[in-house]
Structure formats: C-alpha cells, structure tokens
Length: 449
Image 1 (spheres, rainbow, N blue to C red):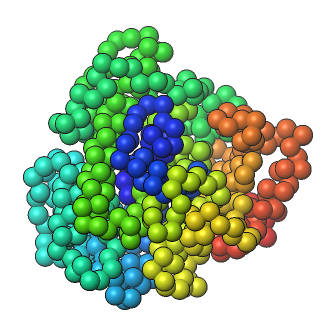
Image 2: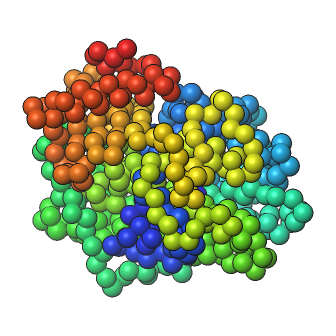
C-alpha cells in the first residue's frame, strides 16, 4: 500500500501522465477493480478501516488526530492467531505507545507519523533506528529481509506500506530528473472555477495556483500571468509526485521478483492499493478529503494465479471496509460479525455475488481542520452522487447532486434542478438506509430517521 497514490497515475488504469510497468504486471496477471472506493478519504481513518473492517465512526479513527486502539479486532490479529507469520513495515500513522503500537504482528517496523523520505527513522518493538537511504527503498529492503528470515513452512502476511507519494514530494536521486524535458498533460479541470458547485469547493485551500508552498515547488515561483503561473506550478508539482510514484513502482518490482525467484508467485495473493485517491490538478487541486471521484477512488490490483483469472477488470463496487474480510476469506477464516464489510473473493474471481452492493456511504469528519474542507457525508450509486455538507458554520448546510453519466467530471450541481427531484428523493432515502445500516446516526439531515 502506498499513500495518496491516485488510480489515474497508474498505467493499468489508463494513466495519461506516467507509466508503471511493475504495477501493471499485477493487473495483467490478475484483476483490476474499477470502482474501489474509500469511505473517508484521509490517511489514518482509511488505514483504521482497512485493519478493522469497520467504518470510521465505529473504529474511532475519524480524523488525523485520532489514534487506533490496538485492542480492537483486526484481520492481522486473526491471521496471526490462525498460524500466519505477520509483519508490517513502513507507514503506520495510527499512533504509538502502549495500545497504539501495531498489534497482531510478529514483526513491526514503522515510520513515526508521516516519516521522512531521506534517512528515515523507523520504530520497532526494541526502539528507534535511523536507516540511511531513501524511504521507499528502505521499506522494501526491510520487507525483503523479513521475507528471507520467515519460516518457509508457515503462511505469511506482509503489509509493505510506503510513505510515497505523500507530500512533501521528494524524489530519490535515481528519478530526480525524470520528466525533466517533457510537459505532463494537464487535467481538463485544472482551471475549474467552481461556479456550479456548492460553496465548499471554492472555499477549499488546496489549489495548485495559490496554496502550494515554496517547499512544495522547490523554490519561489516566477512572476507570470495567472494562467501561466498555474500551468508552471502544476508541472513542478506533478513531476515530483510522479517521480515518487516511479520509485514505488520500481520497489514493487523488487518484491514481485523475489516471489518469482522463490517460487512463491503462484501461491501468494498480491494486492496493490493506496489509502485513498488524490487530486492530480483535477479541479485545480492537490490533496484529497472530498467525496469527488479523484479523491474517492482507490487503486486495487490483485494477483493470485491459482484462483484469479488473468487480465480481468471488474466494475462492481468495492470498499476499503471490505479489505479485511477479503483477506480473512482467502486465509480460510470466518469473517467476524464485528466487521462491517464483505469479502471480495468471488468478485475478484469474476463470479456472481448475490445482492452485491450497488451504493456506498462516505463521510469526512475534519471540518475546516486542514485545507479548509467542509465536513460532509453522502451516497454514491452507479450513476449518481449525493453530498450533504452538514455543518452550519461558516456556511449554511448545503446539498450537491451529480449525474455521473452526463457529468463525469462533477462540474454541475443538479440538486435544485426540478427534473432531478425524483432522483433526490430516492437518494435521500438510500442515504438514510445506509446510515441506519452501518449505525452512523450523528449529524442527521432534515427528514432523516
């Protein structure tokens, strides 16, 4: 798993801006999920959801300030109890000390907080160690070292979690000059003016043209007219982001090479994902948080030659709350009732799954905390997305509705269009149903209940 790696910066997902040959190997040898979504697009909450198989309001990690309670049931704990050797290396971001250290792992060696790209400190049970080198390489080195030391007679779970490509975007020396002599294509919504959206979009402070710092841009910006300056800043931002992605791709290749060399590829389920999506200049933004598509979508590539047909794509909905149940299912373990997700195993195989989810619930809690993004929740179906900005300060509560069929870039809020009144009524009812089903009763909207 990486951090902030948008699906549309992966070759297998049709990227227009980079290539990822090693990640593409996973997709070619297995399945690519085209509608994999996070339920709260921010790092720590998504990681807590993946571990616990529960939504943020249930696992208690609603924001970046919340720490995960290691006494909560997680899929690594259950795998460990079933005889698996378990390890996590790299990004943890769920707190440290006592009950907040990683649990359910025979070995853990993790970054404190976000960690550093160069000469990172990693924390393990025996203390802190500075590891010379570049974080993506170091995390892979430690992962491979653990794989070599494991008991080959027992099954294993390894969670190799990269910091990259999280901000600040600091490439390694190998990729420092990648894309230097080319212009990366701009997203079609880079110059979005937010004119037909709710007030939250215009209020957000994560715009490429005004909110990137000199540190992000590796120096002061030149004196240019506004549109040229936006284009210049986009190129500076996106090239460093993609250079960080290139290092992740190379290191994924090292892990795949190890599995091949050891004869493990046929028997090992390999999954590549990120903790959420990311705006790559889309809507003029960097960062995530919003329920909009680029932030919502997670990459999910899975390879398991014994069971998953090669080169498949699947458009059925998959959520990060489903990851834990999926891994338990592959290990032959029952999914405990505490977990709120469902196993994706039959979906990954391409089989029918009766009554599979055709809508999903999303909630972002960090009202105005970072980047001035308003707290909101909503529902997405195959065609529509309904969003409710539920706080009354600094703006009145507000709704957005997008028709993803006619408006895939989510530029036109049609909530108040009389022609969509039946859709609004249907989606508000579905939103009530989903909130009741998962037990999120806080901040109700008018008529809910």
